[in-house]
Image: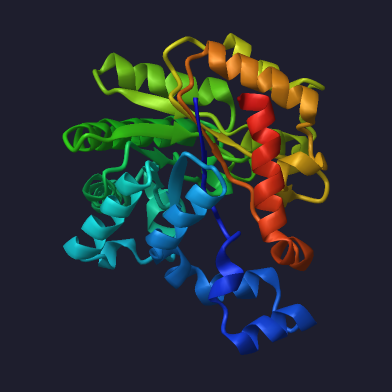
Length: 322
């Protein structure tokens, strides 16, 4: 089982200008300001991400395709250079496909919207293939609150299945394994494991090999709408059918404060050491090949301690996963 990262914003500070660094340190810029200022250039610096993965003893990088990103502007030379540096350093790659704005319409009941989202995702899948990525991770899309009940749900589900069948074939023809990720509770649809599994069973029954990228941190957001989270939430995996998983996303969540992706080794969310030990045992039994960690900096203090977080969290997870 390989250990990977989506670096999210943990490398962003170094891309700020000297003036903006001083502003950030003085409180004149917040984390969101930093992200918005440099994410295009930081996401595009694949060489830096590969070298960081090597330095922090990470096996794999999942590139963050959340918009905005520069990936569709890459030239063939850019893509070949990125592919070569990853290969030379023994780093495998995947791409997290866009999941907001146009990309969030994969489950839209209106065919024009759905097709626009699918066509956009195909362009990113082609980019991933050119980079030599192993897989792409896809969110199922979102629905407005007035479509999150009744017969609308059936329409939304049918549209997602249509998109998955289309994209899975497109991806497979380019050597990409497609993974479907569960939403947070705030997206209202495709939150529960049963929802994702039912969709995947139908898609697989039609010959499309789509896998489940279970994001336990997303599932933990159920706590903020009054849904019970067991003391051992990782055991939700026990009832999952075999052959469903290859890549999983690993991140934590702090209910009430709505803190996403806090450092796992700090234990401030719902996943403590014993939970992660059981999680590691369960995913190993399920045949998981890759764990992608998605820790992000949410405060100025975390940004300023980014190197310490990356080193200590990786060492902590290595001690658990081996």
